[in-house]
Length: 150
Image 1 (cartoon, rainbow, N blue to C red):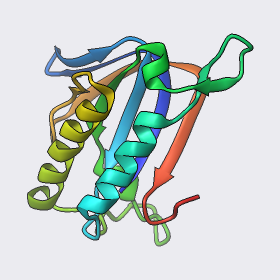
Image 2: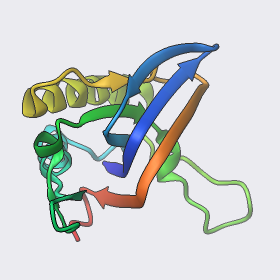
Image 3: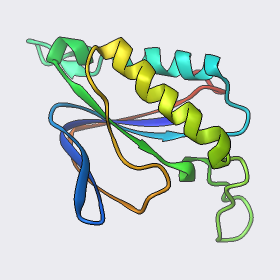
Image 4: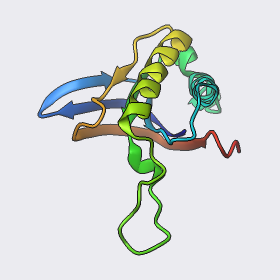
């Protein structure tokens, strides 16, 4: 799994002009699922997201986690995080999981993040043409890959 976390002061997802998910302070998380992903990858990643300390403390240091700032999560499925661009100019998405595998893991991530944060997780609509708006706070953007734990 790959995730791009963006610390935001606000973010929203719209599909056909309708808001499907919206948050204030928190994380916009773009989530990519690949065929090799397991429930262990999901649990590891959910813990990382829920406990990532990138919010400012009273000294301006990034020491606070989502719970410390009463933050929320907007989770968006994004298969394009597995784009392969080595050959030519048209990316290949061969590593991205097909919907029959990706949807259950995406839905489980919603559940897991909700449990870990104690708050409902705002979402987009899997496979839809989504319009995402955000105010990236910082900017702070972090990528996490469960296969490359750096």
